[in-house]
Length: 262
Image (tube, rainbow, N blue to C red; front, side, top):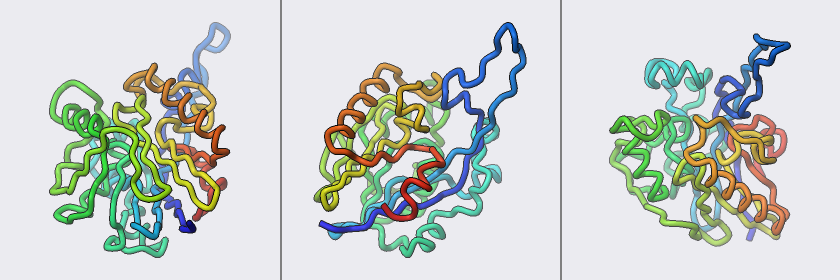
């Protein structure tokens, strides 16, 4: 079966590399004040233009992230510097799609750099696929003092047609959702099989290539370190067995690796 998978460039977040590579820069006896690494991180979405459905994977940041929409401490830590230039509708249009073309949305997770475009689907019947553990944790985090600060209730408190996923499942022919807990309890990846080739979307299971090769992210980016290791081993085994191309969560190198269309 032939179909296109489009990679949408949704802009850049800038942040300290220590968040992504645990101990990337550390003081030593010989260098007690090392220079920190302030790096760029890719924000992307996928459009799977499948004969059975046009599927959007994630929705990116809210376009007003840097204009007071995101809580100031979060923006200071993870600055989506060009969010205002990357409204979801405009980026879809640039790739040749309209919002009305989207038949389903898959939320890898509900952190604010992934769920910020959900308002476009407010009041529609477009199914929003999310893992059951993710939606529970997102609401707990946003509404109580426990959980993670990276969930922002205004992103997902809309009239949305939630479709809750309990584990791995087929979405359409050749497109399977994969539960990859670790970064969050309900992180979803995707396996896409097309014309004898496989694309393995691991997303924020590995922000950068170094993470995929086993270098841990900082504790602040991991809900469960052991679960993260197990999900990584699962993804790597799947890659080996299928000779898959692997799409990582925030590595700018993905643009050169995949281009606009996989």
